[in-house]
Image (tube, rainbow, N blue to C red; front, side):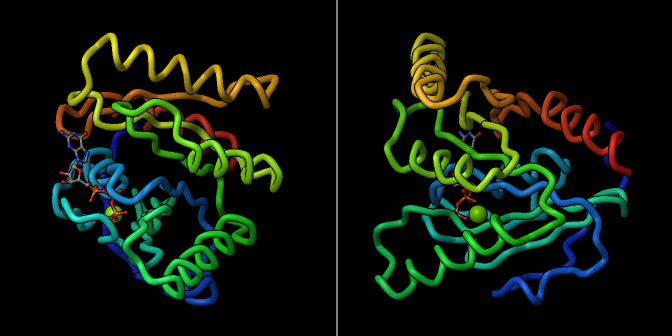
Length: 199
Ligand SMILES: Nc1nc2c(ncn2[C@@H]2O[C@H](COP(=O)(O)OP(=O)(O)OP(=O)(O)O)[C@@H](O)[C@H]2O)c(=O)[nH]1
Ligand SMILES: [Mg+2]
C-alpha cells in the first residue's frame, strides 16, 4: 500500500476527545520503549511524525495520525513503565483499557513485542486481556536489527509457544525493525487487506 499522506490530527487524554468521524483505526501498543512511535514513523516514512525517545514513558496521550485521509494510525502510551507513580499508572491503564475495550473504530490492535527478550509475563497477560475482551490484534516483534538471528528465531518461537497454550489459532505476526525499515510492506499490506473489506 502506498502512503500518500500522513498527518498528526490530535492528542487525547480521554476517549471523548478522540476523532468522531468513524474512520477505521489501527493502534499500536506495547511496553514503554518497545518502539511504538518509531514503528509509526517507519510505516509512514516520516521520521518526526510520532515523537520518540530513548527514555521510556514518552507517549502519554492517545495520538491520532490520519493516513491517506481514509484511516488512522493511533499511537498509545506504553504499559508497564515502573517508574511512574501509582496514580499515573492507574490513569494510563484506565486510558488504555477504555480505548481498547470501548473504541468502536478500533479495527486492529498491533501489540509490539521486543524481539530481544524471551516472552514477558506482562505481554502475555496483556494478550490474555485482549482475548477476554475479544479485541482483534496482531503481534509485531520490534528491534529485529538489534537481536542476533538465532536469538530472534528462538524468542519468536517461544512467544508462539506461549500463545499456543491459550489460543487455537495464532494471530498474524510480523518481524520488524524501524531502524532498517524491515517488515514495512508486510504490516501495510495487512492493514490494506482489512481496509479493502471495510472501506
Ligand atoms: N535499533 C533500533 N532501535 C529502535 C527501534 N525502534 C525503536 N528504537 C529505539 O528505541 C527507543 C524507544 O523508541 P520509541 O519509538 O520512542 O518507543 P515507544 O514504544 O513509543 O516508547 P513510549 O512512548 O515511551 O512508550 C528509541 O531510542 C528508539 O530509537 C528499532 O527498530 N531498532
Ligand atoms: Mg511512544
